[in-house]
Image (tube, rainbow, N blue to C red; front, side):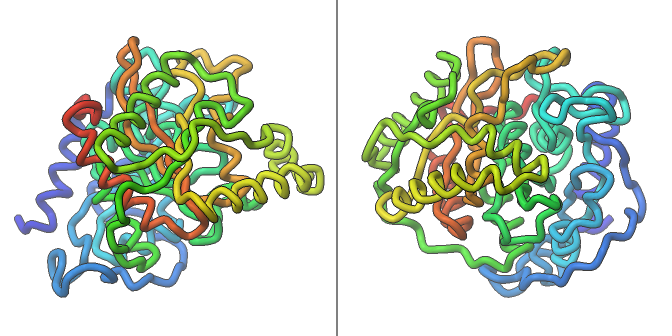
Amino acid sequence: MTAMTVAVAEALGRIARLDPALSAFTEVWPQQPPDGGACGPADSGAGLPPGAGVGGLPLAGTPFAVKGPAGIRGCAARRLRAAGAVPVGSTAVPGPGTHWQTWGLGAHGPTRNPWRPDRTPGGSSAGAAVAVATGMVPLATGSDGAGSVRIPAAWCGVLGLRTTAGLLPSPDRTGLASAGVLAADAAGAQAYLRAVTGACVPALPEFPVPAVWSSDLGFAAVDDEVERVARRAVERLAAAGLIRLEATSYALLDPCDAWLAVRGGRPGDATAVRAENGHRLASLFARTPLLLTPVTPNRPHGHEGPGERYSTSLTWAFNLSGHPAVSIPAGFDPDGCPVGLQIVAAHRQDASLLEMARAAETIMESTVWPASPR
């Protein structure tokens, strides 16, 4: 068995062993996956040494999962395959009649959070986050229209990147959704970004990097324990000399009504809020490279649903503004559920954002970076 097929066989074995209890997948492809749609390949070797990967392909033999039934046709999946990666299955998204921000529905029923099976993994990239958190695959594609990559990444304890709007084709007619990736670590997300965009690895930033922390963006009602875990992670980064906090509060206009208006086909009703928040964010990033917040205001809820509360209240402002944002593990709440720290950067600073996430990972892994629940 070649090195190229060993990793795929091992991934399929883990899926067969773990997925009946977690229901992260809707389909598994032991042989040839369905064909995808057309999307021109990026320079998938950019930023990598010559000959990287098996046969010179940078991701040759790397198993990955795609989000939902349409994921194999996505641009990111096509470019990952061009870089040599091998799709092994499609992951769970919300099922028919299921509220979009609640959970996933896989081949074995509701998708379960691997840290607390009685809780949701988040959505809508639910199965993708579970598959990565449990080591079934090292990478999974996602899409993020309101937090659909960042929220499950936060609640499953993995890294989740939402790319800058327009960097890849949007899967959403409104343009709110951007392609994203869920990965076990920052290096995996960097490999994804190089494969799908051709982005080179940027030079390491000069530390400490100026940053602004906001626990609530001026409007969200955040659980005390969630805020405490995320704030402690920020304090660790500052104590290690990775960031320098320029401010500990920051406010945007609540984007709820504006997001709902755009999603509902009434973009004109969102113009004022989008313009004002866009101005505030442009002013912030002109002087400070990073904005830090919790990913969600709340802990993972049960499978009965979120009630009236929006888990998206700290994420969807950046879908309206188009900024890249990453969720990294910050620690655990008293219930044993992961909490995510959101890091937001200026437009098209995706590669630099992942460099920051990688630096944070090396500092935090000994204290708060969670081990796999597999």
